Image (tube, rainbow, N blue to C red; front, side, top):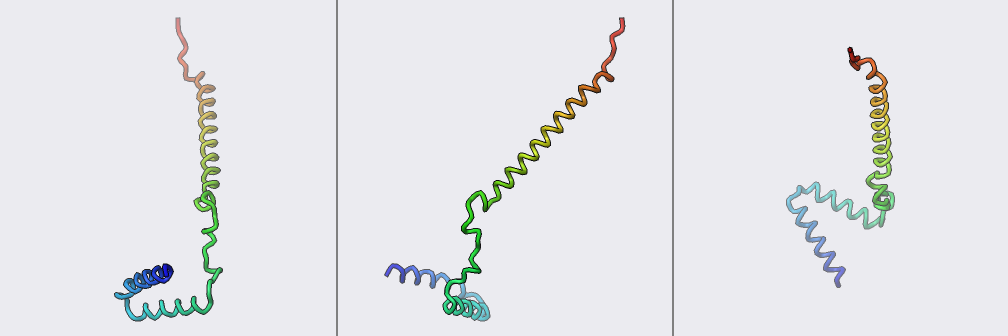
Length: 98
């Protein structure tokens, strides 16, 4: 009987939701409920993301790779810029005069 009470609770929630809707919306809901009752479970409508892991769902592996590429490029730009500034510092250093 616990399943019946759950069903009744969900049915009353849907009825409360549909109470303020126009008749066309009720007819549409009725159509889809009948279709699901006749056809059963429709696996082609089930989202495949429900079977994905946390890492796949939020693309964390791709984000980690892109962040690694970004920080590597930033590090290389910093090192090359530092090297170039050191090499050209000779031109900007004031010579001591005696």
